[in-house]
Image: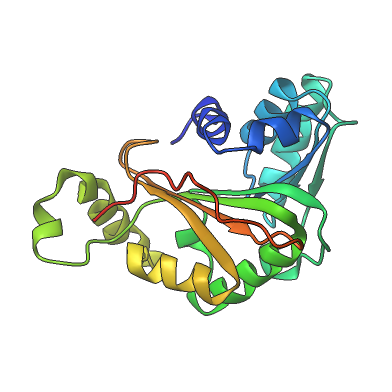
Length: 214
């Protein structure tokens, strides 16, 4: 499992994200699980507000207990709902989905991305960190896909689909995002996608687009 510190370190590499959170911004972690990512954001950005979205009662209770133990209850709030029900309107500077995208019902992924888009402030960023299925025969021999192949083998039991890079990029573009980063090295064995919600004002495209993968 990913460590919360790796996620925050990845966010710090996204242009403007650290400044927005340090200035009292707001972050939402979709599928927040045990709450370790929520707690890490709150501890590293003491002036930001953090919201977790978690439908499973066991994890809601576990995360609330963790937040209580660390004295973060006033800074962090956990919503006990599924991602397909979120209805925020331009509230967040950053939304993260960490090892969650493949667990979302495949037919609801587009709707959830649309709701994330609506929840972001103009200029806000969505960060997806997840496995990606191979797209070609050559990918099967690429070590970066080894864990993805194993993950899909296990996840098929639950009916979950580990998407390919192309599928994720297509869904992001179709739901109004501009993909600014696709990188398999930021967090090894995972693909990281950063996608921005366009600002209301006419602005020049960002000069930094990460290292795109061929």
